Image (cartoon, rainbow, N blue to C red; front, side):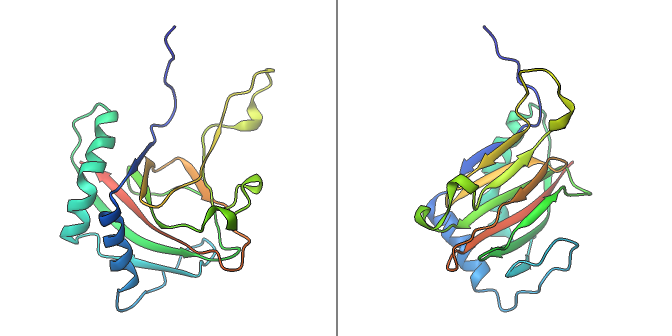
Length: 186
């Protein structure tokens, strides 16, 4: 039997502990975290990072190239934007897509311990949605939603038009730090 792969291509890769620590230290030690104005709810903190930083690009390059290999196309790419996100209790990002790019990604730098999260409520999950859930009337409904409970150092790369969001965490001391970015294929 062959399974037919269909739908958006998403990869989940893991950076080394040193690479992850580099991003976390660079984000936390930036002199100023300029809050980014968006139509999304404010997080505890959201700030730009330098997408032209040579070290960021050197670290991310093999992971982005791995993702591009799965697309089976000889693309070149450019990182268009990078920003850090700090989520605390009850912070979340609602469903959205990214514009003016081809791929988006999330790199998890810090996540609360498992005992701080309610997994039944899918707290802290990155949720990816594809298709229209309510449009199916057959008895076997397709899977249109995928929850990723990220681990420290995980890099998730996905098409920019894949609807995605994060679920809030209720624990008062919960903190999640991630780097998000957009990639243009050339």
